[in-house]
Length: 243
Image 1 (cartoon, rainbow, N blue to C red):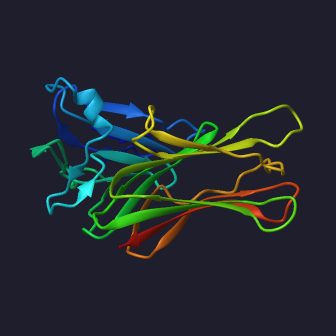
Image 2 (image 1 turned 180 degrees about the vertical axis):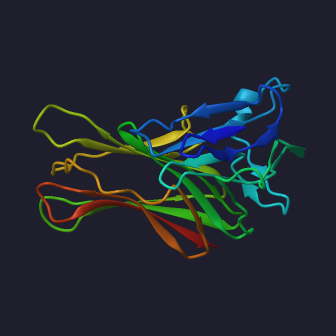
């Protein structure tokens, strides 16, 4: 059981799960906008490796990330209420007791993406439905001419997007890096680095909400970052394309 410290105290989340199966990460410290509760099966020898690769399914058979996300902006735990992993129940939320729980129940052709800002970067987890692609588009303004646009397509299954501003010498522009799932690479990511001719603004606008459920052909802007020496902004968009 989790309680949110408020006045009065809120019954935040109550769930049943396997003993020693949960893990908390990325939050909810003030510098981070979200946290995750991850679950796996500790009785399996490879549970730690599989926890970051396997997808759970809802009771209606739709693939989901088998965990819960804490949305610090809205004081909500968001995730499937009773997912299965490898055909076994992994946890079950007591929805009646849990005042801060919002059930995630996507349809088979929908796209779920969740995540946000942490430390000096951003990270998002997502599940791309069968027959679909996530089209990731990053736009970086240049000194002259149109912005530099990078587009990548991520296929069905569990995918991950990361974006960082690597610090450099004082007065110089930060160096952006985009990381995308690529299971052909030794560390599992394609890393794309850029030289940014503009300095990033000191105060970043709020990023998109923590959890999105998109229908086919819908898009979401995950990131928009202002620059100090350009009227344009850095943007990172994801579109669900059904083939």
